[in-house]
Image (cartoon, rainbow, N blue to C red; front, side):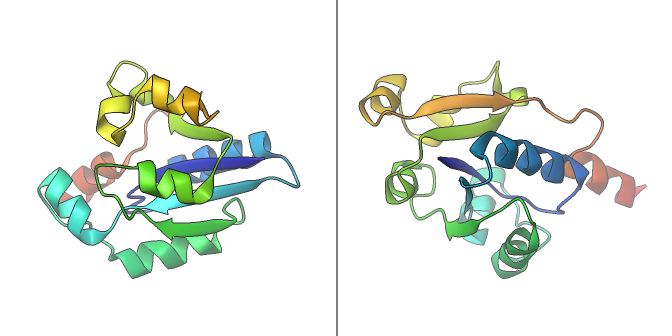
Length: 141
């Protein structure tokens, strides 16, 4: 089984570790967790500012995480379909903080597209009380 997840993973923290641990638990011992990592250019375009860590640093951090089997570049930017199709996952995992947002539009696909690819979108419980944004705010204080 292959679990796909994507993101920026800037200022890697315990919430990221918990999320990836849960992905690996779902994938199982013989399964794989593949992270599609956003480029620095896409992060700057999407969020209006560069990530703290460069793509290369974020890549190395994720590769060192025991819950991650591989890290690939999100080649499509706002259109995640090329990266997803290159991985061919059974599941796409996202944080439950996306449950009330339009994740499909943000990723550039529809439920019909997921169904046609036989991919199931799953929500992983969000780790409350920690986020990259809150870490940045703490540093500023």
